[in-house]
Image (cartoon, rainbow, N blue to C red):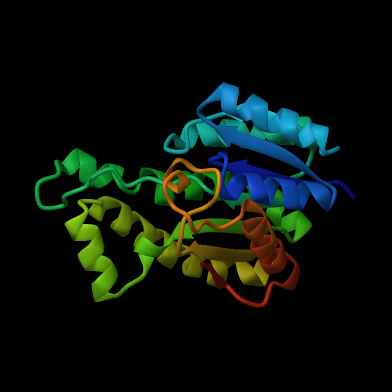
Amino acid sequence: MSKTIVVVGFGPGTSTGVAEAFGAQGFSVALVGRTKDRLDAGVAALKAKGVTAAAFVANAADPAALAKMIGDVRSAFGSITAILWNAYGGEAGDLTTASMAEIRGIFDVPVSGLLATVQAALPDLKASKGAVLVTNGGLGDLNAQVDQAAASANIMGLGLANATKHKLVGLLAAKLKPEGIYVGEVMISGTIKGTPWAANNPKTIEQSRMGEAFLKLYNERTETYARVS
């Protein structure tokens, strides 16, 4: 039976590692993002490794576009087996001065976008006993030190987005487990090699480690949360 993973928020870091890891296991890979050139380059790199892949342009903050994308992937590859949600949002840096539009926008990607994608793919995920895999960042941790760092750096919106996404993973895991669908998150405490943030950081996490971490969660299906640092 063919298997397909939809990688939403494709880029040079975590999602590249996951696409390569799952592709090596025989998955067809649907790369999703806003930048066609980046997607096309990713598809070409995967095809060079013998992986079946295609690009699908969609904004992770647009539920309607995401629902259409799921339909397009289904038409191209058949039933969807897994989703990697690697898109992130949370632009309101200072929550004390951000507009209400900015505040509402914090949840467009980690809540509305993720849920729209899961809902659209749910029939496939039920049929395949599939998986929803979510990337998260260390700002989602609930502790005073992390909160202080986010407030000091004016990235409070991202902290709120990550914390909300962390809770959503748990809720989806509880809801979908009886349907045979696995939901899991890898929280990253560090910088992934290949990303813009890694340029001046001598200690980075290899993309392949992220692929291995998500593949382990997918195969074992015992733990909801994992961490890579």
